[in-house]
Length: 296
Length: 319
Image 1 (spheres, rainbow over the protein chains, first blue to last red):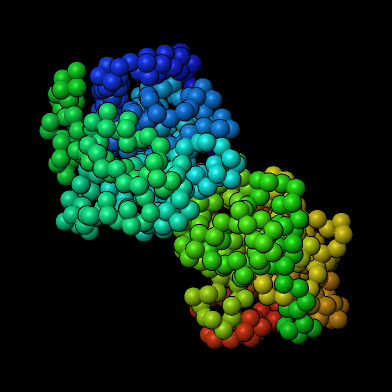
Image 2 (image 1 turned 90 degrees about the vertical axis):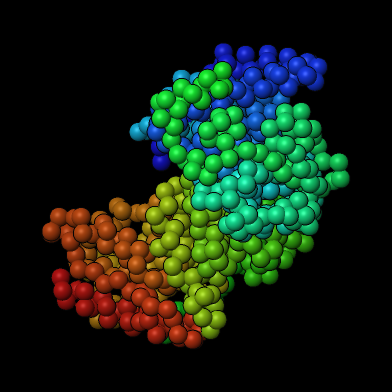
C-alpha cells in the first residue's frame, strides 16, 4: 500500500498555538469573534477547493465548519506538530464526505501545508474525496461509508479508560447518517458503558442527499432517542460559537455527551443555504466569487 | 484414512485461548472483543482472569469491528473474536474501511470457520470468508493448520501487530506440523516432500491432503503436500516451485472455490511459461450446503482423502 504521509507545517502550527493562547485568554465576546474569523477562513478555503476540484459536498462542509473550528481552535488537546502523540484528544469526522472542511481545518492548525489544499481530489493527491489517515496527519481513521466513525470513537473511549488517561474523544456525524444501524449499536454500547469521555456531535442540518431527513426516514425526536440510549443530551444552535464551546465541555452526569447541533446546510453562503440540491452541487466560477464576497 | 480420522483430535480454539491468556499475563495491551461469543470463542477463562479486558459489545458485529479499530488506534492489541460467518459477512465493510484501509492493527479472529456449524446450515457456514477478504490490500490472512500453528499465529500477531484475519478452526484436526516447521508470514509449510504431484491444503484440509498422499504413495506416486497457512501474503514462490518440480497441482479448501485458495494458486499457474503451466484440480464448494455434519459435508462436496487422491490421479493423467 502507498502510505505517503503529508507532513505538518511548523510555521502554521506556531501561529495556531499563538492564536489558541489568545483565544483562551480572551473575554467571551472576543473569543467568539476570533473563532468566527477562523471559521470564515475555513469556509473560504473549502469553497475555493471545491470550485477548483469541481467536486465535493459543499452543503455539509459549510454546516459542519463551526463545529470543526471550535474543536480544533479551542477545545481539543492536540499538537499538530505531533499528531500521533501517545496521549491526545481524538476527533473523528464520521461524515467523511465533508473532507474539504476537514482538510481546510487541518491546514488551519498546521497538520498539513495550506498549499496542499490546492491538490484536493486531483490525481494522486493525498487529499482524496474522503479522508485517509495513512496520507493525512490528524486523520484518526478512514471514513466515507456512513456509520463507521462512531463505533471507532467508542473503541477509542474504551481504550482511554483501560489506559487510565484523561483523553476525550469527539466524533461528528451527519444527521442523515443516523439512519445507519451501526450508529445505534455503538450508542447502545456507549450508554451501557457510561463512556463519559465520549462526545457525539450530530450535525443536524435536516437535509440528506436527496431530500429532508424528516421526509425520508424521520429522525425526530432525536434528543429523546439519544437520551433513551443513555446519553447526556445538549441541543444547541450549531453555528453559535459560544454555545458550541459550552456544549463541548465535559459530561456532568457520568454519561456520554450527545450534542445535537442544529445547523443550516450551506451556512454562510446565501444561495447554498438549506437547499437540497447543494448536497454536492459544484459552484461555478461566478458563484465562487459571490460566495467569497459573502464570506469576506 | 477416512474423513472422520482426518478430522479428529484437536479443536484449535483451545490453543488460541490458551496462548492469548498466556500472552495477556505479561502484555497489558492485549484485549479481547466479542459479540456475545464468550463461550463459542473459548474466552471464559480470559474473561475470568481479565474482566476489564474482555469487551463484549453484545450481538453487534459492525460495532464490534469498529470498536476493535478504535482500540487498535489507541495503542492496544485487540483480538476481535466472533463466529467467522458473522465477523466477515456482517462486518465486511468495517473490515475493509476501519481495519484494512485505515491500517489499524486489529486481529480479527474468525472462529469456527468452514463447515464447523454443519447442521446449522449455510447461514452459519463460513465458506466465503477467504473469497471476501483476499481482495483487501494490507490485511494478512492466516489459516493455522493445527494447534501449534494457532499458537504461533497469536504470538506473531502480538509480536508485530498488523491488520490480520486468523481463521481459528473448531472442526477437530490432528497435529500436522512439527518442531522447526514454523508459521512464517508469506510462506507455505512443506508438510510432505514429493516430486510427482502437489496437493495444497489450508487449515482443516491439510490433514486431508496428507491422508490422500498416503493413498497415492501406496501406488508409487511421490506427493508433495503444502500447508497454505499464509493466504495473504501469498506464497507465490512455492506455487512456482510446485509447478516447475511436480507435474500437477490439486488445491483443497473447506470454502467456496470462487476467489479462494485454488483461485489464488491458479492465478499464479496461468501466468507461467507453457512448460510450467501444469494441470490443476480445484476442490471446494460451489453451492450452499445441505444439512449435515462437517464430516458429512466434506464427503458431500468431494473433499475426502479418496476424492483428493482421485483428483490428483486425474490431473497427473492430463499432464
